[in-house]
Length: 160
Image 1 (cartoon, rainbow, N blue to C red):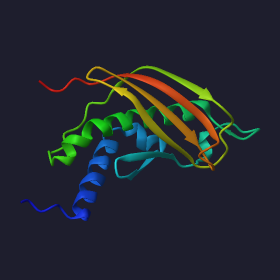
Image 2 (cartoon, rainbow, N blue to C red):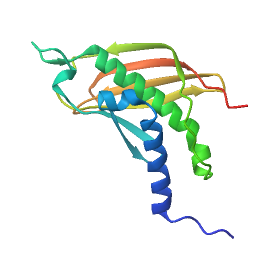
Image 3 (cartoon, rainbow, N blue to C red):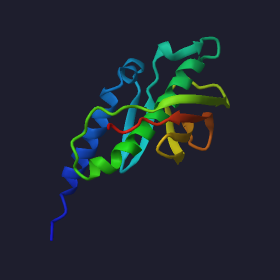
Image 4 (tube, one colour):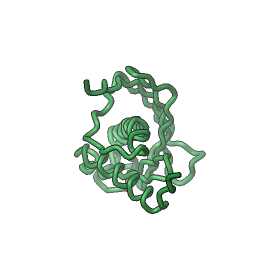
């Protein structure tokens, strides 16, 4: 009987795979987005920066920065879900091909305040060709969302 891997080995493999995925998307570092992993659950983090403010009179986060944060969180969640099985089987990770956005609808529920923002994506449906994802973003209180979105994505086809 094969002995289970030590928890630190599993954690290291998962963290390395997530960093490999994130480093493959230069836009993530440009925007300063981060991802926190707990098991298979990811939380997107958009650390506050002054250049993310769209309306300095309020001040409020720029709608484009919010939209980019939500869409990026959805794409990384889908990619992570696609990688999970192969990664857990111990396969070598190659640069993943990312899902392509078909449409993305955002509901701006209130102004984003000048502070860190968080987002989590839930995959509603994921097939071989198509996926549907819902994303929620909050700042201080998870029950007080400041934006949410629903996106549909064309899934990358496996290499032949």
